[in-house]
Length: 339
Image 1 (cartoon, one colour):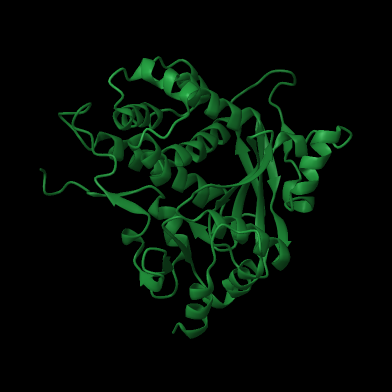
Image 2 (cartoon, rainbow, N blue to C red; image 1 turned 180 degrees about the vertical axis):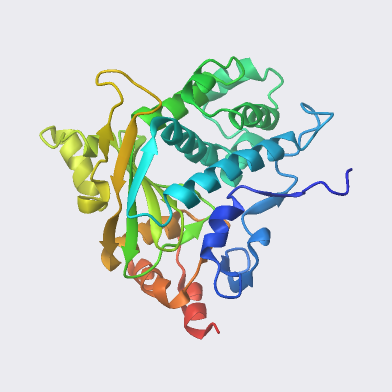
């Protein structure tokens, strides 16, 4: 093995994690395996050793997938740093928007939880029957890596749809994420955002045994979050009884979901130079706590945050709920004692 080979493969990029660093260049990390609150370097969180290493497909360069991810991450890091993170008005061209949206969906597909799903063949029968056509030997972890290898090179949706190496389920996931959701940005005023290993985190509403994704939560820093919102919130479908019930279930609404203004290069035609103009909206403690409750509820490996005092209310309110998958009493106590 090449001694210079990077073995710590992060499923959440460090350029995001570093935004949660404190003055000592560390994050506060709640380790769910040990129930301990730790100070960590971002290099040691939300990663697995050799997670994307692949000798079966890329024998000459088994770290090709990780290398491609690193390149994609640098492009998105530059976009977020220069045009998103510290702007009150964000202007993105369609070409930038597509690249960013692909990156967000790819984050979900490259995740630790998705890896476990493919490793453990944890699919329903209909999905398995489709995937087996792309991987007849049933080695779905190899299929996962092969598709990651392709997706990490895609920068627009045509690249994905025209690829013969990507299965139709994944193609549909990426298309649905683009066509079925619109993007907004919010700043926390009162409290700070929490980030977990389930990144992005979803707000879902079950209908007839199917979970409808209402919002997709993408924390970019302790105070700024990118939201993907189901188009039903944009298209004013409140007159439809089912949609109105679903919309009413979501607590993410109001200023947080106001659509961007669009500026088309040529009206009636799609151009990669079309512009999307976002005004960053402020949300306050009650909404920040709710968003954090979704993150806390789904976390499997751990969570990170910057300022313990600014997330204490979120944790305490979460522990008071009676509808959660898990509790964080130990974290609440640790925050109060943590120095």
